[in-house]
Length: 430
Image (cartoon, rainbow, N blue to C red; front, side, top):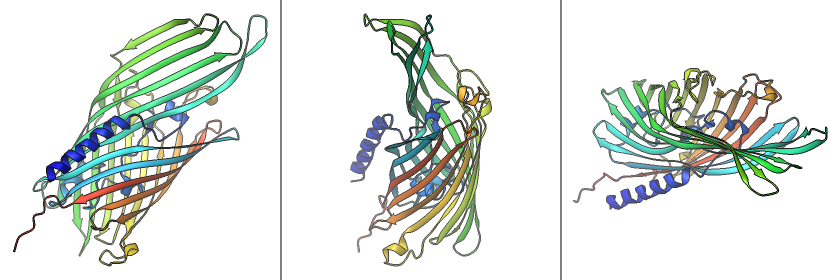
């Protein structure tokens, strides 16, 4: 029976790998820059608590943020989680507003214990998202001084994803260490079309594509300090070294003749030797738990983007600082009253952008934005009281450093189903 379940999980995993690249959860013009919008690598239960995870250690949660947490996996259970998201966004620029609605399959993960004190986690999650579609109508003058209209449209899709395996080991009763090894892959596709109202050649067409692949590593540590009966303080840290990965870049530009419908190639460029890197990162956090009653915690993340290569250049990005705070409360875990067994969660987060926007709207100055958000959510227990349907609601606001840039607001829902079964439990016959 367990073999059939493993095959079933593998089939879902394979399907998820094939579909993830076709999905996106944003329509932000800011994803035109860098690697796109950075994904939140927490799962639904954590997102409802503001996205905390470095010091989180819970038998009923999968925690991809700190590989050291996998040493706390229950020895009798197998856990599997699938997450989906939906998002409604508002965009505003110079008093003009637009809205977008989209959603996607987002992550998949499983975890179980290999041997005593050693837990394994395997999963698939996004690293960044690229999805935008914006344009403008402008005018230019010909040799006779006559103005002609032309439209300029920019579209982009893609993003980076990773398949990972994490090991967590308890070297002492209170200390756990872990490592997360990931295979990074993905494409970033950009297209620009300039269409002229009156011209022998109807439009210009430009395409550039970045394809990335490589290995990344994260190293985790957790220390558990008992604070009395059923209470403990857990402190966690995660270090991610700067990582170089393979990146192939292709650029092409065409002109389409409106009279003959012929396509003329203006320029072609391709390179497999450009340097691309993900930054060195430091994460630190803690949680204080009254087991089966409440959890509160906070995280901080610092990423050194300024010396990470992008198209062989450094200083292309801003260093990024992110704060998360949140917790959960369980009214009464032992009662038969369903609503008293529900996990009620809340949190908040803040970060600055790693990207630098440099265009006419910024007077060719490098500027970024700040992101603020609040979170609410619930963990609904299933009939077996081990599995959960986790729902996280998030409101975020992106505030650019210059008012001439686009401001954004998001209302996002993440739903994750955590399947927790006693695969390794054997009943004794009397």
